[in-house]
Length: 282
Ligand code: PAF
Image (cartoon, rainbow, N blue to C red):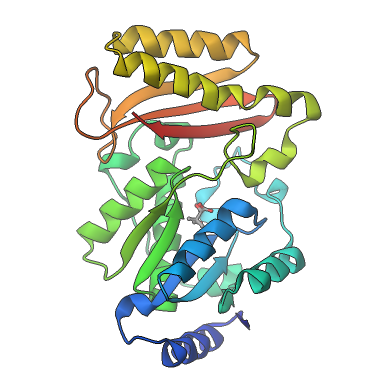
């Protein structure tokens, strides 16, 4: 596995990866963007990218632009040596580790602001977050020249924001969405789960269970407003502080009251100091 830290190194590593690819299609180079602290969910993205036959670049960059002033960037877990060992074992071809000065060099003055699916939910809870995500992902696409990118469904709103950006800016990158990896308890894998106490770990899977109960009732035809209010109440009863439990159209993220062709249940809830996100298809 090649490790690139400068623009010159990533250009050379991706050119070499392309040469070694079995096909000359744009999608023969795939990007897995991450912020490190890799877990089985990230490695599943690498596996899914490799399964397409592509050479895989995984980026590790804790992006300051997507953290709000009240969010602790310094608390974000970092484990470069451990991450590189996991990527090597997973068969990743190139690890892209730009520093902040490479990602945002002096004079950097361009931001990407996506409307539509960025409104509400995480966009409301974390002002500026999706501008940071869209800007860094567009830069990663440009830096690597990947023709395909792999994202986890766990950050469903993020995926819709990136899809919208790719479509609106006519970026030549195929967006692939990989189902959420879960622990045996049902808890969605996340780098932030490491901050849960032992007691909170026992409670945390109730978020996914609550979404599944709500989905069953929605499919049975129960009124969405009642189902969502009762899901929030159930979470509160287990010790969560819910931020939202919402039924939305899956791509636009517009709230809906009646099931349509593609629907998603989204939830965010705080458990102790950890904000947990989850979502399922309905
Ligand atoms: O999902 C993440 O880890 C980040 O938001 C991403 C897509 C790597 C951009 O920094």
